[in-house]
Image (cartoon, rainbow, N blue to C red; front, side):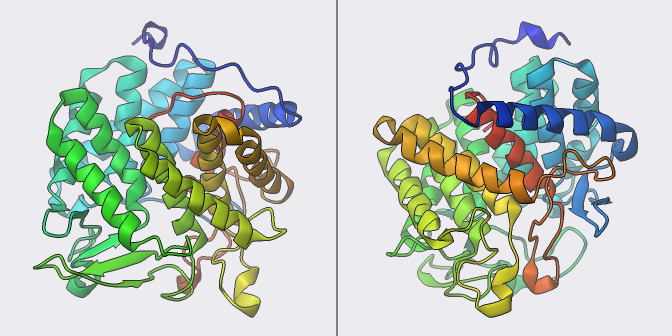
Length: 395
């Protein structure tokens, strides 16, 4: 497939001339070379979490993070046109075919998985199979919409590998789902089917009403009566406490609402992303890499989450793109976040490291507190590219 025949990525905005341009350009080039260098080691496996010596533990077949390495490969292809990245990304299709074939593998993370592995393929190559796969994933995601509460059910009562926890699953939304709405918005644009847009907007509005607190901090999760849809209460799963503010959850919401605003033109979503970003900026104080939870006390606050910083940086650049009167503010915030990652977390020049960023906090409560994370790596590349003026992605 001749990727140059596709026009979707042909025109990107000229890179903004900022004091960080050269540093960011050098960093994205190192990311690409790191991906190229690690191909013979990673092969067809998909990274899940880093080890203490910056090697990878790899995903099982249905892991929610299975698409992030593919997303990095598609970004590298966009930047270079090198068919090695094309072949490595497309060779992962069987993983996603398997997800579509197994009901227990399907939850709200279908958006993460198929936007980065299949929508990307369709947009860059015009291949029909990944388009069809992504539309089927969108249809399955649509089935998770609960009209009585106007939300997408996050998790399943039975996890992909057999764990059973009905209470954990029933009537629950989580901040992460905002990123998955992009698949529904794409499917609406691709097919014209209104129900894709209705479900995406319904969930976005419900999350804004119940995940985002009046002070612009956020719950990680919110529970509803699974029968009536009546709102019950907020809670956490990966944060410090139910009433704390988990930084990656706040970042998911920032990026998710900024992206939803970009697709729909809805100013309510843009205002939500702006308020959430302003609150995160205030909560960070003088830090340049966010704490894993902004309200964790004492020693617990010492853990940083580079993935939250990367996600939030990409969101900040989207705010700059959409808020012409506040361009400098949000570009400066994005630059500050990228600067923190480059100063303290950058592994791209370490020949022994298989990933791009150190100091991610996967799940502090489960003792995964200082790791490389494939989603941090993906958003690091996206943020660097957005800082340099690229505007076409897979969301």
